[in-house]
Image 1 (cartoon, rainbow, N blue to C red):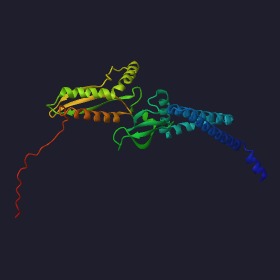
Image 2 (cartoon, rainbow, N blue to C red):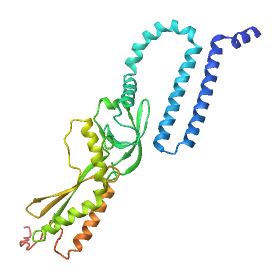
Image 3 (spheres, helix red, strand yellow):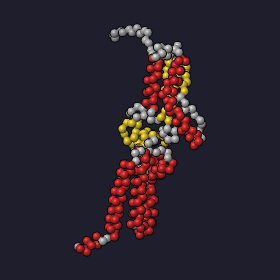
Image 4 (cartoon, rainbow, N blue to C red):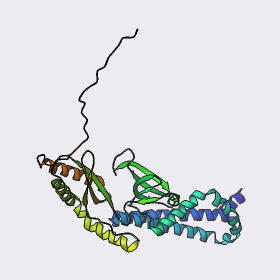
Length: 299
């Protein structure tokens, strides 16, 4: 029995397993300590996230190197077996391999990055993490109107970047064009209505114009794209019921709903101050008469 115990204790395979386990424990402990140190020293959320990811990848690399070192004398014999098993593994793990390939593409192409607002695989939200296999989003929309969080965290396989269009709301151009339609009654002062609309939209959204112009210039240098107008403007359309003014403007993608609310409130205040010279229009229906109804008893 003592000989058997001695063989077990001094078995090279068991010794290597114990060595690998101890190395992994030490590496995990060091990685966690390093991540805590990074979190305490870096105040910027984006920089802190990237630093933590970098420390994690360094830990993966050191762990793989340590395991390869421990089993270095057996790697040659495993080459043929790994080659035979590789084909079967590749077939069985197609989705996993595609997700890893998606992660590599995201790493080097920057289709999106943590902090961007994207739509991927039919899901819209802010990217809060990009893992080797999955992208994690804080979802917006669905049962919540507007670009507001609904509280769900969604994890989407990275392979979707090869299968679905990737909509990035905040990539090279972190602004959106938005517009509101304002119906004005016929017979009012349409010149005053236009002046109010132009003045209010410049007051509310004018602060975005300079930065949007700078970003759009960078887009012109990078892509084959036309020079677009980022200044707010108003145009008018004659309809059967009212004059329809459309106010178009650029806005920070995170402030779209709040900006539309501010525009609407300020426009209502300005129209009220005109004392009836400018009035909003609406579709109204008036019943002028009801046709007579004759009731005849059966039988």
